[in-house]
Length: 95
Image (cartoon, rainbow, N blue to C red; front, side, top):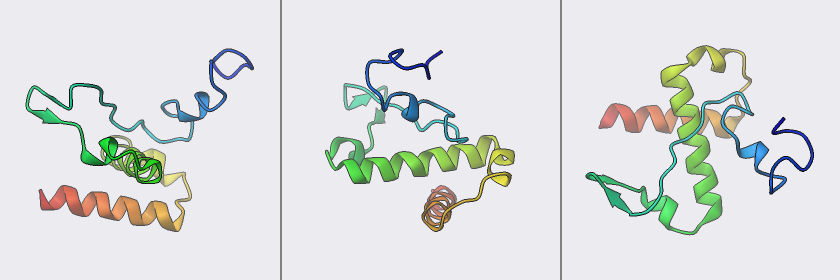
């Protein structure tokens, strides 16, 4: 029902919903910038929407890889998605 015309306030809302593109959702943050020793990633505070979209896609790919790798098996990743996932895995392994 969320995909029916007029069900959501903004036409792009359904496209940004969790799992509409076959990936798990990225983490979501709110104010304050630091809560319970957890900090909102700087990229989300930057105001650079292209960087924010890139970060969200990378997080979605990474979460899907970690929690539901089977979903990636049936998905044809673009070159950019492959690069973002490789960066995610490398950063995770380095920490």
